[in-house]
Image 1 (tube, protein in one colour):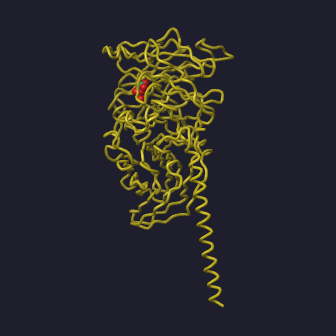
Image 2 (cartoon, helix red, strand yellow):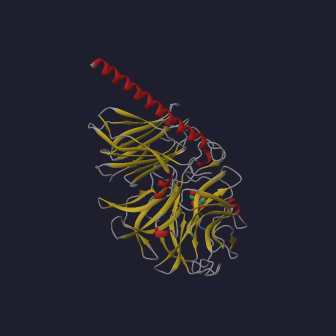
Image 3 (cartoon, helix red, strand yellow):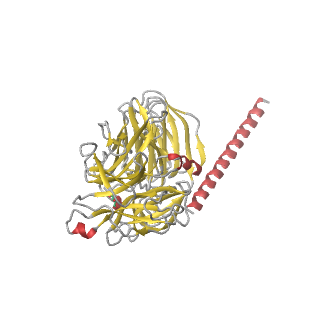
Length: 527
Ligand code: FRU
């Protein structure tokens, strides 16, 4: 009798296994099918990002003119429509309702007799200070740098000046101001990237401009006539390269009402891991002058591919939303994509956090990304004993959001695939450093500057308590966020095949606990 029962139990178990394998297989087939549907047609070239912005074709660099108006987030960008390498710059244009799904618009600004259209910003001139619009139909005004290539070739120093253009139909068509340039050049070689914002305190427009090794602050009543009011930075911050793409804005310290001002300055070269990078200063702005007591150089992102990032003007609820160009001038022209070149980072919300008395600028994906996150594959809590490893099969890589919590911020992990590629990330809370090595992550030999050793990110104030890890993978990029954006690394990768496993190695001497591991699929935004 007992034997018969056991036999039945065995049969039942076998049946369960068959059913669950079949179920699993069906589930996998379903997912594979969905992947297939989503990889046919438009925006499906190898390495094409599926939930990050990239141009339909040709060359793109910096984000420009980030401004919100009437339910639309505008994204203008440095664009060269005739080639996949940098050339005469235009402003490309796209709009979005939620900053994730983008609609392409016609090119906004073309080069003219004053030169190429370099980076800059855009404002809504709601009070019609410029007179370009009316109070009922105020102008969207773009402020940019003119780069006179001929002047540069002729060896002159005054080849960069500032110009403006306006649109009365929410960015669809543009008119250049006939009085351009609005700021001339008296011999400063790198004089560019105007960021304009409404200065509440002075009740004026304020423009930030970089001039080689420092920042200049200018004010205006009408966006046409400008006066320089202060300078900052000749003796502050990193100076391994030219200062570019400034931004300045107030932010509250998380959990308090105290407000500080944040200054972003991109520099190229001179970033800690080589090439281009974006430093930040936290300080005060009295309406005219920026000051800081910060003595250490600080960086918004210690990966190699987050450059020229700036924030949105005019957002609802005054949220500070940042977008960076996901590349590096060290190899931007050489990356192995054919139809287009480069993408933007995922839009990130900026906050200031006080940790052990240090103020840190945190950046973390905006909430609306969650609307595109589907089909979580949760795993139960995992315990990994010392000197052991856990191989987690990946289902949606390389189009996924992977998140988990670590009881101890000491862990080595690597992504791998059947082509033998590996992407290694070592979080070492004891030595207070994260190391990322993409030297075997896939295609690397298109430029000797692409890998150049292990990238290092100091994590001096990472708490020893559980740490949240979030990674976004999108075909040719990985964005790593530790502790809700306290420490961030953004990198391009060009794997030979999809990563199919994430291996987690425990060398802590203790049991490593991984909680709430979830691999989500992120939906594709292009249709
Ligand atoms: C930054 C930058 C800017 C310039 C633009 C030219 O990447 O060098 O300083 O305006 O790119 O495309």
